[in-house]
Length: 485
Image 1 (cartoon, helix red, strand yellow):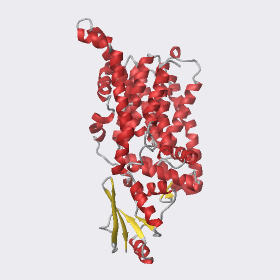
Image 2 (image 1 turned 180 degrees about the vertical axis):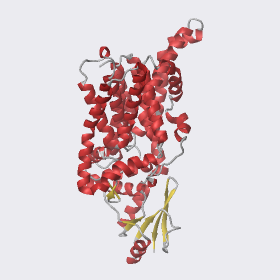
Image 3 (image 1 turned 90 degrees about the vertical axis):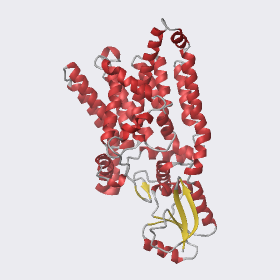
Image 4 (image 1 turned 180 degrees about the horizontal axis):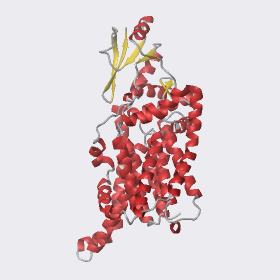
């Protein structure tokens, strides 16, 4: 290994693992996913993910398997359930570095691209959270980089492509077991547009270039099909349909209205100023600068297609969240690093007529290193200091602790029409289940059954049951009320 590879590994590991368990579950995704993983561990059911003790089939369970396995190995801690995302982020960074070197790019540029990816704000924050998007990004990155390597001219790669195609297959396995149909579509749209573009440029259609990724994609679908087979045995055709159609095609088309996250067509365009911070300016300038060289430079064409094709696909989807842009970040990092190299070349040429440009170019290593040092330091401070501060507003622990305190007093506590956040957090922190009531009749009967029975609700205006609020708390502006009759 060269000196830059261990340094990048060290910096990325520091960014992703430092103070990883320093704060509690925050936000809806962390609470929900951690709760489902804890339920999988408690029930020892590795086929059907469950929330509210009911099947939760939004996505295939790869991230849940890893999270539940970490809980079983290391205990039910926030650190344990974030490990899978952090390792996926680390592997993506190092894979990007290694493949760029394999593509013949300078090691310094590959190092900068990897570090830009690791320090992209959206990427960094998602890698340090519980969820499946970091694994999806790893799978997409692995599949697309392997695909590009396999399709380079034979003089630029090893003659035997089997290892590269197996890497592609592994990436597709990870992507599809993380996000199902979306895990197939995200790399698929890039491959289709790239092959279509190169076929038009070369005025030649090579059937083999299209058949190979298709065949290895079919091979990659085998693990997903095996899981779907077990799911069919347990939950019937309805469970399979929910994974493949309702929660995938339905979210894309907008027919699954319960999914939420529906935003206007221009949502991601509005989000562009913050999408790839702090490197977004370099990304967009690079995309514009390289536009005229794409016909003769397939390397730049591939990463431009990666960014634009996936962005277009997500724009047409009805369900939108900024986290969905995470799979675009490796391509963004490459374009930013490449344009940074262009700027350095401009400074070098300007140095012949400008002393300022000459001075900046001569001290480029120190300036770039200093800037990266400041960026990394800011992230470490955020992880150590600001993330725990956010617990004051976003942590579920105070509410769960109040439930446990009431239980210690001999009171029975149930959840009424619980949302996914509080239900998931309850299972995770209590490592057990609370009873969940759904109808006003069930609530009225429960409260009247015994004095001191308590229910946790998030709204008292629509109860249609006379209650007395004994305790009021809030999580990120969402009120929660402990009520009794």
